[in-house]
Image 1 (cartoon, one colour):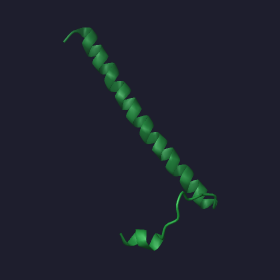
Image 2 (cartoon, one colour):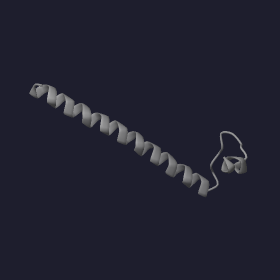
Image 3 (cartoon, one colour):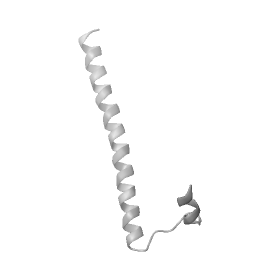
Length: 57
């Protein structure tokens, strides 16, 4: 494997890791925002459901 190929492989690995971590961070931020909305009573549900039924699952 050439020096350039190793460099490209390293860059690709960094980009994949960065993409994966940014996706995780986005999910974390969305969850934190949802918690804030719940605490402030401003969360709007997309659909209504029976919480007791969900808990029993």
